[in-house]
Image (cartoon, rainbow, N blue to C red):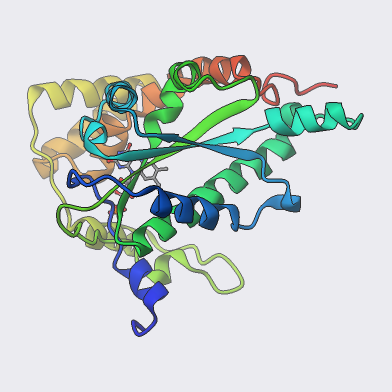
Length: 285
Ligand SMILES: Cc1cc2nc3c(=O)[nH]c(=O)nc-3n(C[C@H](O)[C@H](O)[C@H](O)COP(=O)(O)O)c2cc1C
């Protein structure tokens, strides 16, 4: 792998950082990061996003609590990336132009992509200046609270947050699925079950989670809620036979509970609607 290129080296050796020194990030560094983000490609050059910088101790503590991740409070800077239909809507109104982006699925799709691409430009820029960074997803579980805290007008919808700071130590490089599993030539290569299991086993080093009563109860409940009693029995038999909980069962049965993910849909749609994103609730003209 070519590593004599600074950008490639940075990308190939990156790890998410969750432990930071007390050092604040100078405004000039933050400004460079922001400028790098604004140079990101954006559909139609419309830039349907805003970025909220958070450095106040009380705000960081609140976000840490909302997202259930205490390390967030210790990072000097958070950047919250939001889709922003508000600014475009105002521009259209002022310029007497028609506007439907906040109720269009296509516009949502582009705005979401633009927001994330902008975020990743800033993430790479931050890493290139010796900062550590980690994305924080659970911002989207707390859209209403974040909107209130940051006084986001309707049409400005938080997507993801990037927590930044000077790393206390170099974060580890975590394994990925290999290139021949993820990248396809011209057409999708549907791998065999054996190859698929091997790929995940290699990535997670066949990680095993210990069985205990609480885990078993939760997994059973999740299976029943999503796939029914018969599947729950299948899952339990597999656990009993192996004498451990495998990584897929851990992820979908305990960590990102498949039933809770599904059950959150109505609440999530309600939060998006309240935030002014009506494309999911206005399918008909
Ligand atoms: C959209 C998104 C949301 C994430 N949310 C969190 C989070 O809430 N907390 C956290 O510690 N890491 C979070 N991460 C970081 C991932 O856990 C991390 O990227 C992944 O485990 C791979 O590790 P690496 O980035 O160190 O290679 C998130 C990453 C992404 C892209």
